[in-house]
Structures are given as C-alpha cells and as structure tokens.
Length: 113
Length: 115
Image (tube, rainbow over all chains, first blue to last red; front, side, top):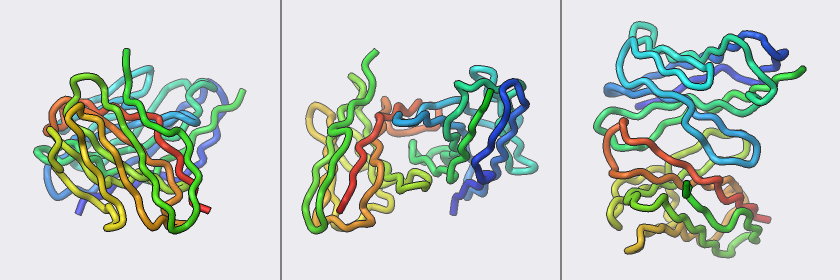
C-alpha cells in the first residue's frame, strides 16, 4: 500500500533558524508529493507540490525536492518566522488515482523569538 | 474568493445519537472529498463524490453515509455515534476528480465531540 512517514514533532526552533522536516514515502504506483500546512483552527492549505522525480516545489520560502532514489520529499526553509508555527503534513497521490491523498502523521513546528 | 464552507464548525453529540455535517464546495467545483482527523492523527480519507456519484471510498464506517446533491454540496450522515468518532472532519473540493495536477481546496473542518 501507500504510506508516508514524517519525523515526529514538535520541532521547536528560534526565529531565523534553518528548518528541515523529513518525509519519506512508499507507493504502489507513481506518486505526486505534497506538503500541506495547518494553522491552529484552520483547514489544510497546500504549501507546495512536486509531480515528478527531481522536481522542486517551492512557496513562501519553503522548498522540497522529489527524490525518487531515496523516496523522500524533505521540507526545508532557510529562515523560519514565528508565523510559520503550524502543523505540516506530507502527503502523496498516486498518478491516475484521483485526488485521494495519503497523509503522514504531521509535524508540529513551534518557532520562538 | 469563496472557499470551501463547512457547517457547523463545532458539534457536540452524545453516544448513539446521529449527526449531519455539511460541505459547500468552491463554486463550479464538482468533486467533494471527506477526511477524518482524529486527535493528533493524520487525516484519513473517508469518501468522495464526483458529479453526485460516489467516486471513491476509503475507511468510512458502515454507520456513516454521504451524498452529493444537485448543487454539488455534500452531507456526511453519521449514526449510532461512538466516542471514537470524535474528530475533526474535513471536506475538500476540486474541479474534476482525477489527476494530481488538480488542486484540492480544504474547508476549515467540523469539530465533532461525542460525549
């Protein structure tokens, strides 16, 4: 089956620190990969995506590269802000499998001044 | 811009009661998805509809049913509620059911608490 594994949180960083949230996956087909962000009390928002190997998704200073050889899609940001505090979900969709997402368990990020 | 609207935002029920959750997709979106997110858990896909027909089914209990109406809004009906049904229920919508290139838009969710 399909599954997504994320590093456990919470991750606590100081403002302007470098962020990495690891994500690896297993998939029965050819997946597209996503990072979603969930702010307190809000729904999931698409942060970035990559649809094929070696693609880099980027948005709001966040980046993730689709690495087929390591089945990974790690999320990075060079300098986090307090406003980045949220829960981050890695997810995949199998190409041709509609929009049925398989999520990781989420990683809570806390950024402090 | 209009987003996915879910109602109610919060719902408190007792065991064995029934609940109905509503989802209004983004205008012109014809596909709706339901996800369940338990406390501290990842969202789990329940069911989806495209053009008023069920398009996919995930881990939805038999006690739950859902449908999509002619105006594309969807309702999730939950009967014989159990304590374990307490969760955040997300609805998402998209234009068309297929392909990872179609962007999914999520609502803010309905927080269901079963006492």
